[in-house]
Image 1 (tube, helix red, strand yellow):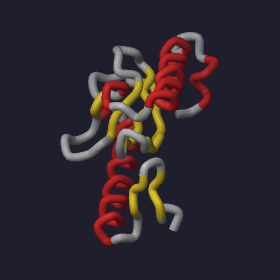
Image 2 (cartoon, helix red, strand yellow; image 1 turned 180 degrees about the vertical axis):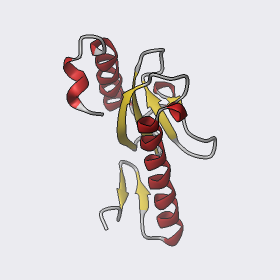
Image 3 (tube, helix red, strand yellow; image 1 turned 135 degrees about the vertical axis):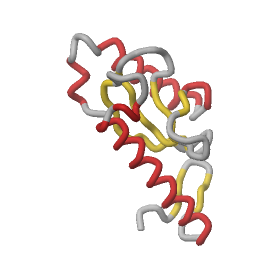
Image 4 (cartoon, one colour; image 1 turned 120 degrees about the horizontal axis):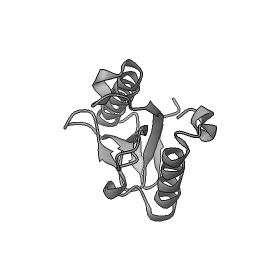
Length: 121
């Protein structure tokens, strides 16, 4: 998520909620309850915050210990699909997850407790 929202008076509450949620995730783990499912039913794309704020951070929840942070922005429509920028962020995460799944099947990557091994390649 772009740092430009950190000083936006209209969005500061949402920004702080996202930072607070990330802090709790670092302390407690990447638990499902911290996220709102987004994307399609067969992927792990999710969003912060889970309440009705305007600002969203899209993530990829790989496990209870691995979270891939994506990008985010202002949700100014009913769904992210109606916003080209947000939709692009979700599609990027969906494509990344697909590549990781293929890499896991082929043995290129392995998921260990707190890390995806081999992803740097």
